[in-house]
Amino acid sequence: MTDARLPESGVASRFLPSPNFGERRGRARPDSVVLHYTGLPTAEAALALLCDPASQVSAHYFVWEDGAVAQLVAEDKRAWHAGKSFWAGESDVNSASIGVEIVNYGHDGALPPFPKPQIDAVIALCRDLAARRAIGPERFLAHSDVAPARKRDPGERFPWDALASAGVGHWVEPAPIDGGPLFGPGEEGPPIRALQALLALYGYGVALTGVYDAQTRTVVAAFQRHFRPARVDGEVDASTAATLKALVGAVRRA
Image 1 (cartoon, one colour):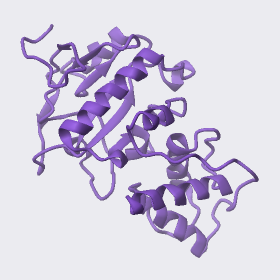
Image 2 (image 1 turned 180 degrees about the horizontal axis):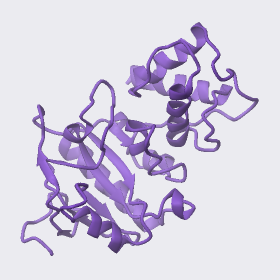
Image 3 (image 1 turned 120 degrees about the horizontal axis):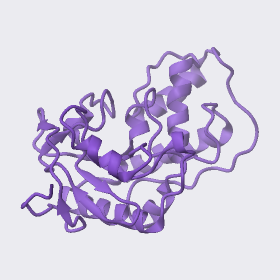
Image 4 (image 1 turned 30 degrees about the vertical axis):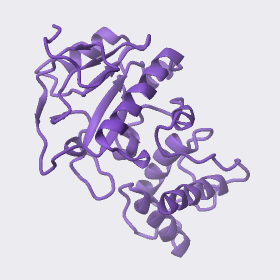
């Protein structure tokens, strides 16, 4: 049911209220945006889920394939979109973020392309949120960034490069893929600890074990899915390492 309230973003055309929200914890305002795909066969099914009190899930904004946008939860409230998650020292990502659900069947539906009108709307919405909420480019995140062990959305086919070209998000041109893995499973040593430290410095939740273990592979795959999507395998090759170093360097220079 459409709410009489006007959406807070001018990009959204209507307010379709979800009951699934609470108060933000320990934060006056959100400082990041988490992008998701809905992961269901239809937009109708996804919207029904996000507005069903029994589901215990929601998001602030919902973007259809044709570019239509609706607001589901007020921006000053804590929507339930990120679940158990972590980014840059923050373990309550829901309290720190605005969640945007993008209609797409996801990996279970062979990850269909995101239509241009939809991406144009996502860009417009993100630009608006960045301007009104003073959200920095490095704080536009994938659900897979903040929950790499559980989530893959919005997926490796999501055009982060197109968003960056429009001034949304943090991006560097991925280094060309050349050669195989630099480390084997279970390998130990200072270079692996340095890799983990770079991932953690950028924001990922990874323990500095110095071992190329399962959790490190999972985080590397999440990094690749966002920043080096041509090959997502969890293996650190020269391209992955160079792209990560360039990305961290770009943040530190900003």
